[in-house]
Image (cartoon, rainbow, N blue to C red):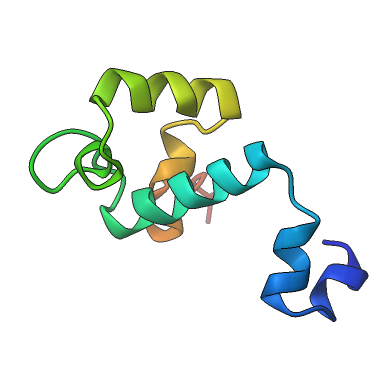
Amino acid sequence: MDLLLISQSPREINAHLSLQQVEKRHILEVLARTEGVIEGSRGAAKLLGLHPNTLRSRMKRLGIGRSLSRRPHEISQPRTSN
């Protein structure tokens, strides 16, 4: 991450982000809140007011994969040999 961004307030940081970056960040935050669930009454699409296929399309366009939509502890880690 750029050190300049770390020293700035959230408002200053957001002023430097593109619309695409803001959209990606927002979708990732909502996906984290829904634990990666896209569809259903508690899914990210419902919270965002989008059809699930529209959300999937935006995720693809923004480079958000299914693994990125899950919490870090839910992403399978490579096995290590003992």
